[in-house]
Amino acid sequence: MAEFYTQFSCILDVGTADNAKRAERVRAEFAAELHREEGGYPGFAMAVQPEIGPGALWLYSDEQGEPEHVIGFVLRCAEALNLAGVWGFSWSHSCSKPRVDAFGGGAYVLDLGARRSIADIDCSNFVHEQIAREPAEAAGERS
Image (cartoon, rainbow, N blue to C red):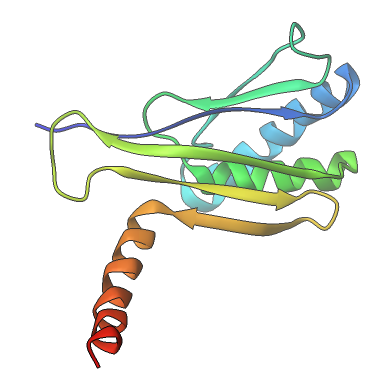
């Protein structure tokens, strides 16, 4: 049986140790809401990394990560902690055995101050879109 994974590892710097503690409360509230509404839990783990910086939060998943949960959490932190600047992360989709369409990944870039996505990419969608577009462009070259 094949095992499917969504993995990532990134740092969200919330600036101070106090903000890191506040971010832990934001995550607890986020987790409670997910449990109430979906019966699930955040698809990422979080640990404060003071050796990197006083407000460094390590967000990661080694198996079943949920990039959308990371985005939701980060935007909530941006609001609660009045964060600004640009932040982003990437993830991978992989499989323990070779399977067609089982590999890929993606990335998001967020404007924390505006509390919105600036750009995102899903590698699988990118490949399919490029392949679908290419025949039309190749036909134009033959004309």
